[in-house]
Structures are given as structure tokens and as C-alpha cells.
Image 1 (tube, rainbow, N blue to C red):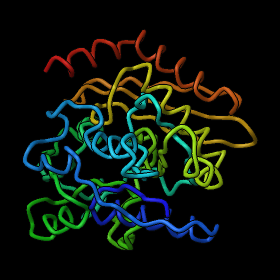
Image 2 (tube, one colour):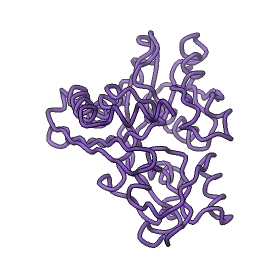
Image 3 (tube, one colour):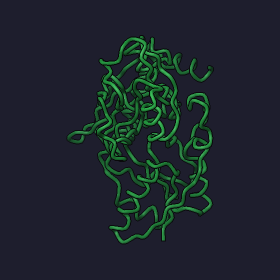
Length: 299
């Protein structure tokens, strides 16, 4: 029986059970092992201030490497672009909606001075760019915890990934889904990452769950992130789509205060997705992203 390593949040377990069900349909039994990560233990500090790559993956990857688990299911946006030696991204299933959603009020309905909660520096920076009149504050916790804080009146609205809300059955809570032109998504948002050791039964079994179009799109997005040198908690966004074998990629780097936002785009064959991402990342650096990111990392 294969062992699936997962975080213990409601969304993480939904994702792990989804993969477990797909494996079962192929005749491969699996059980889920819950592992608490550093990011789960640090709940009172905004993620951007923690400054550690692999916040939600390090302990899970250790379980893979020492044989306590055979595969791990991550939200792909949490997975660093560089994996530990001996581990590989075995599959990226077809992804859910990669966009960001606002819960509470639509963006245009929020009055001046409205309080909006988000745990993401990327979302906060773009929101400040769009609506500098709003008060943007950190909100931590699982999706249900954040929704409860909204319902208690601590915020006028909160920003969350549309994918998580849809997967957990809370799509009706969405007031508005923000298009990538307004709110560029996190790298890999909406996609799952199935990580395994570089060879063996789990690697072979999980390969059947890969979706080539999604995998190519996230390769392009991760190429941007790899070039920019950022982790998942930096003001970097990338959104790629694939159509007729062609990748179309948009990416942004924003200053945390939202005053500066650099946007670029790239396009090319899906077979060269990672290169397209790297070249777009290099373009953004030339246009000033290096200065913004140096300020963020030095803060």
C-alpha cells in the first residue's frame, strides 16, 4: 500500500483524498499520513515575514526521503522550484481555476477605507496598486478560519484562491473572481503537485495522473519564479495558459506598497515552457524587478 503524505488542513486533505481516489480507480491502494509542517506551526506571523522557502513542504519531503511516505500531495504554489536531490515532480493533474477570488463585497463595492484581509504579499501588493484607499491587513488560518473571521466582521472582504473555495464547496461565497489582468495569480495556483522519489512504484503509478497542458503551463510559471529567485511568499505573480500547443504567459512583480508594478508577457511552444518562463523572468529583472525584490528580501 502506498503512503500519501499531506498537511492536515481541510483543503490539503481534500487534495490528498482526491489523489487517493484516482489511484484507487487504477487499482493502487493508498493511505494518508498527516504531517505538520513549519508553516502550520507558525500561525501568528504574516507568511511574508517568515522568509523561509519550503514552509509547507520541508517536513513532508523529509518523510519522502526517509521512506515514511511514498508520495506527497501539495498545492503546487507551495512547492519550491528547486526540489531536494532524489525527489521529483511526478505529476501535475489538470488544475482548477487559477484565479483569485474576493469574498464579502465586490472590489468596486468596497468603500474607501474598507478593511481587506489576505495572507499573501502578492495579493496585498496588487490590491494596494488597484485600490490604494483600502486598508490591507494580514489574515492567517485555514480557509474556514478566514471565512469565520470575515463573518465576525473583522474584515469587509478577504482574498482567497478561487480553487480552494470551489474544492471545499464554498463557491457560493465568492463575490467576484478577479481576472489575471487585475490580480495576477501565484505561480502554480489552482494546481496540485504530486511529488515522489525519482523512481519506484509511486513514481510510476502517479505518472498516469499528469495533465500535459497543465504541467506545461506551470513549468512556464515556475520558470519565471526560478529566474527571479523567489519563494511562494513574495510579490511575484505568473499566469500561463496553453492553447493549440502554444503557451501564453503573463507575469508581474510588485512593490509591497503597490506603488510600482512591472508586468510582462511571453509566448512560445509548450515544449519550451520553462525557457519561456526564464526569459520573461530575465526581462522583468532588466526592467526593475531586481530592485523591488532586493528591497523585499532586505526588509
